[in-house]
Length: 117
Image 1: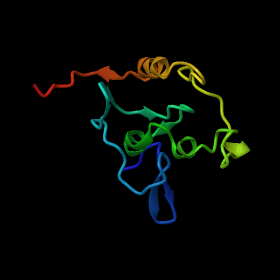
Image 2: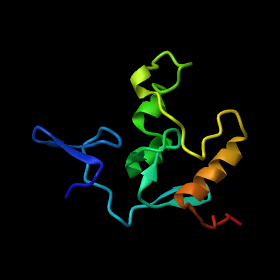
Image 3: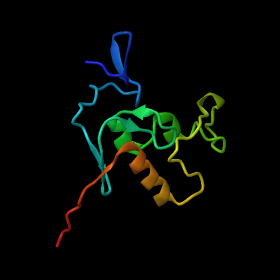
Image 4: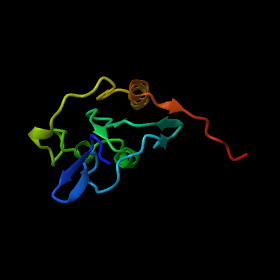
């Protein structure tokens, strides 16, 4: 079973979303972050590229953006990884505002978090 994020390199199936070797995400996979639940497809917070559930759960960004290779102010910057930012990106704005724009753009679902009373 392959998906758009899976590539066969030699005799190995590699996930293009994280670089790992794992089965493709099932359609019923979800990742919860705070009070938001996300379902496939998952997108990089920085560049908007589709990523796998594991990479989304790990850092919300693709591997390139997660390590800062797309940021000219970072020592690992590489020009070939520079990209336009998606509509939800707020470079110096309120982080909560950017997160809300991302949730709206990708269809995050708000869930109730039970309290320990």
